[in-house]
Image: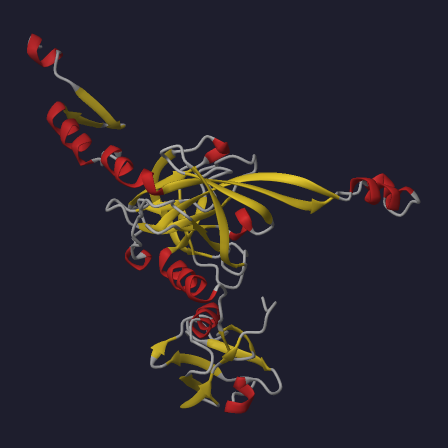
Amino acid sequence: MPASSSRRAVLLAAPGLVLSGCAAQAQRAALPDFADLADQVLPAVVNIAVTGEQSAQIPAELRGTPYERLYRERRGRQQVQGAGSGFVIDPSGLIVTNNHVVGNANRVVVALQDGRELEARVAGTDELTDLALLRVDPRGTSLRAVPWGSSGSLRVGQWVMAAGNPFGLGGSVTTGIVSARKRDINAGPFDDFIQTDAAINPGNSGGPLFNLSGEVIGINTAIYSPSGGSAGIGFATPSDLARGVIEQLRREGRVERGWLGVAVQDNPAENRPGALVQGVERNSPAARAGLRQGDVVVAINAERVETSRALIRSVAGVPPGQTIRLGLLRDGRTQEITVQVGRRPAGTG
């Protein structure tokens, strides 16, 4: 064997597959470098520290005994502290995070990447999507903000970068890919999560998930973890869902959703799209429009309805009072009815 060939660089990519030095170099060149992206977006990523109160937990051995009342009187409500992440969407001081980060907070402090700490006010929260909007006074300066991107264009396998405050360490980024889309993890009626293998840990909640253009395509919200740390399965609320919620919180401080007043399930007919109406509430918008048990909703305003969850999400996005057209299958026949959408009652899951 010639000496030159023995010194040739090789890369064992898989059993039986050998890449030459040139091929290995080309493969490395195809991988993204996230350094410029991190420099671009990290100034808009913030750490959030919260202080709140919660009722003291009664030890099991004291429950139902005469000492339970005494314990409550002495311990009462306890101060608790927590940490999370967020990101600036407006230079004037608007910051997005998770509701579970700030929902019960008495005091919220936002730490910027330049070391400044600013008191924050909760401008609005939405429990059903676990989103919150904070407002800070940047004290005469403009904050660095990041733009929204479209989560609808994401593809499984696409590179993403998560940023935030894992375990209170601050200013951290991790990278990975989109592992799956439209995940339902039973967190709420609007579950539509992006699943990613970018490491997401406690403290990352409310932080942004970026595409390679530096656009926010998700808000890191939950992890699957038997141990409490990252197991390579994280979930982010898609930006296409979050943007509308945040805009309502910005304008009104609350979220109003459309409502029909029906109980639905997926169409039981094999391989058929649609939402089967199982029940109709009395005096609801659906009842007034003539919707019946057994109807299958297959379209809203001529847009196809695939599942019962898709129907719920679509109706929730319609402003209360607006009229929509529902395409139905009833007794084997196709028909269309109009419904004036109502306001989703508070506390409706």
